[in-house]
Figure 1: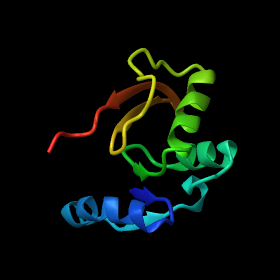
Figure 2: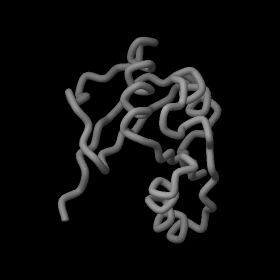
Figure 3: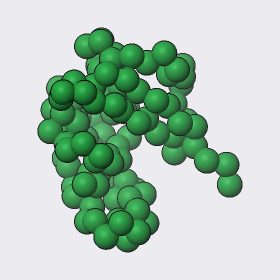
Length: 107
């Protein structure tokens, strides 16, 4: 499942992956800019395993920090996030247990 903020730039970010995988981009308003943390966390928790979510620079750090406060391991998290970077979140028995940060690709 590909979940995107309603903002066009997020939808456009997922479109190449959508075409490659044959999956539609589903708009998820709970991960749009300025979304309250609890709504964004709920969207993430409701997402199926192997989902891809595309959101914004104000939402992603809040969500990752919220998961960290709940006990998720973030031993390799950066101090600041770069545009086009990503997190791979690992979930076990419905609980997010670990986050991997990936720098943006060099082009």
